[in-house]
Length: 249
Image 1 (tube, helix red, strand yellow):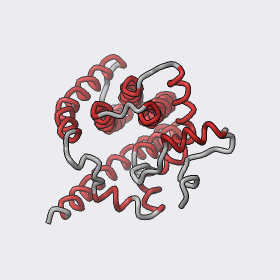
Image 2: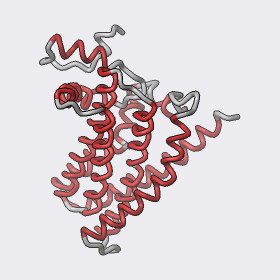
Image 3: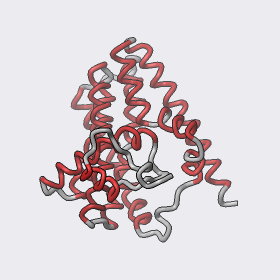
Image 4: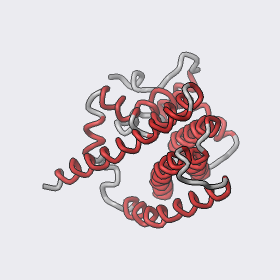
């Protein structure tokens, strides 16, 4: 596969845009299908705008974390509109996560601090899973929280998770093999089918499906989808634990 084939290009790319893609968007097996075939096609244009606005890569990283966390707040509201807003919040955060790395490579400002923030962004997705559970309880009339109460609960849980994730991220940042891929990631990138399954069963697939279901077929089926998604997530964690543990034998 040539370098040109590995670039996430669009038909309206100019020569300058293609050059910038070549400098900042080298193909990585860590990228999932949603990131590579959707977000990477758009991210370079946002990168160009942010560079002209003289934003720093780390500033964009913090914006990414904000939007990812905000997506969970909207999921907790458990309405058709909130699921649509959550979809956009998550994907803006995910898009900015692509942009910050591109900006860092184009400006030569890659750093351990930037990698540390990227790890925190990954940690920011963890409270989103809790928001799915709380949305299920709300839709089943098992939980009654006002919008402000939901934000407070979600904020506290996010802080608790970050209290654990911050030192772990710091240790990973200073690890010798911080770029080492875990065994499940290696399996996922072996075939297109597994990459597609990974997207469908991950947060990108969740936000697309929940938004579409909530506005098209109603909240009852959406609620059952949320339950199924969490059950599958539990199974995925168990399988990932077993597969990862076997690599140490």
